[in-house]
Length: 498
Image (cartoon, rainbow, N blue to C red):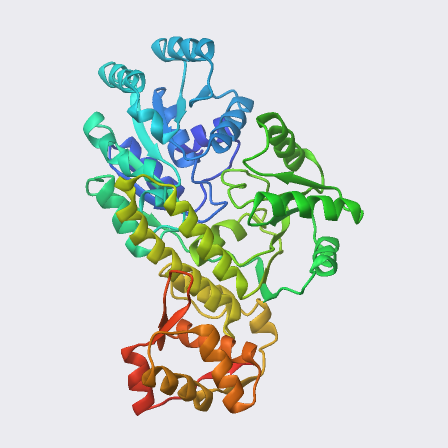
């Protein structure tokens, strides 16, 4: 007995023998007119969930996507398979736009990718109306849907307006897709996009072929970075936080004999396109980029994803590290971090917030507080003694056993009980709350004959354990929390690596 019609369509258009886990229920739900929320891990084939229905129905699926580079990459891949696709954003020339409208009118387009701000344009709304009236509109898709939630790791204000999709196309099924989304983010997506009794398809974010390792960054990590590149198979993706750092590291690696290509949003479009093509076509490329690079870029043999700074959140890091090992073979995910990373990342978040309009500042204050919580949680993963994968998955609401593969699982660091020292810090804050970290660390180091850096490390661990709280304004003022007061009355062991 041969394959069913849906599998035949999958084989004909994409060359796959069968669906990947989680895909078929979403495809069938959309074809049946039902809304969906699909949380499928990086590399699980989320895009096919909305691409195949357009081909089966020979109609149009409109896709909202947050990045122009991501849209263009997916369109190029579809066109390479002879699937009619196009994208519409502010960079499209008038002549191209007129040609696109003709293709839509003649039903010669199956997938149209839009930037979220395009929904505010009257021409786009007219386009949707025409597709709706003629019955050609098969479905709507919101890619990277976590961007709609203030709890998400990559919140975008433009995504907040996507709730109007339901009013613009009331009878059309809508699918929201993301690689990771914690329960609160999933609830936000359903509420803000007004999904109606959606099929919720959530697959584990666990990747059994990934090896996680995190360590303190040396003063100059060049030697360690070169060693990691030398041991890697296939492609190497290196993330740096700033555009300047991307340029500097690409230059340093090239000078050290490794052909490294930079990629960031400040480069001109042609240079970015050349860098992307190099990463896709070179047998073993090394690309240094900011973290926006990689969404939707389907290079299966990435053997190393290396972060030169502390990632901003566990949720974001799962997506970024998940770009490694899509071919199922072993791959390494390495993080170099420093305690100062959290401070510099916090300042960057606050600066970005100051540039927003007055209307957005209330939401931005809430978002900043959440971002700081996510950053502290990521710091706890990096400095913690437990299984890296287990801690990362817990941050997105998934409970799992220890992986047995990460650096901590393979070589557990020696621990000691820090209960006595912790009590000293908590007592000092009980006596005088709201002290800044620097003066507290200096006082305690002087009184107890230890170095100030060790006391600063201890206060970070107490913040991570939620025994004390820290201000988010950069001043690093500290307060004793109710849990900390309870600890002073009835302490318990705090076993941490030094």
